[in-house]
Length: 137
Image (cartoon, rainbow, N blue to C red; front, side, top):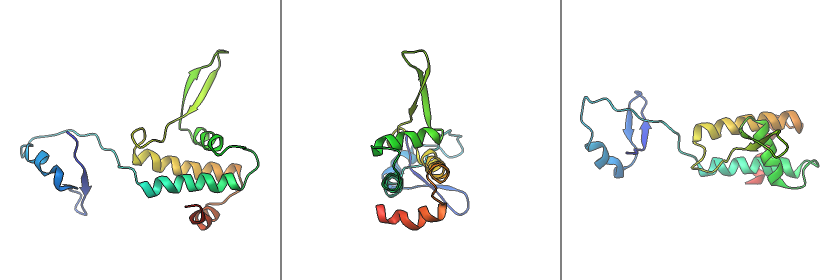
């Protein structure tokens, strides 16, 4: 069973949508339930990530394709898997950032690490990123 919950100021959790009411009614008071907590992804935040990539791409000369920049930054941020290549060496592959592949907690971490990588390799500052990113989305 999947429920959408909202954390309240008193640290309690409440159902987020009326559609979950019937599901919660099936649960017995006093019983202990385990749940896996994930954070829903935000569409506007997803667009902000791609605006960040576009902003850097438009202000650099190293990459010919925006997608190559995106993959390299994701890998540099530590979000990658590895596999053995044909030559026997390890190949790094950027993790998927699709909504069903990465929850909101991980995506927030990716965004913050991406900003750090951009500041190191492309001479941006956090301030210049925040001051200019709105122009790209």
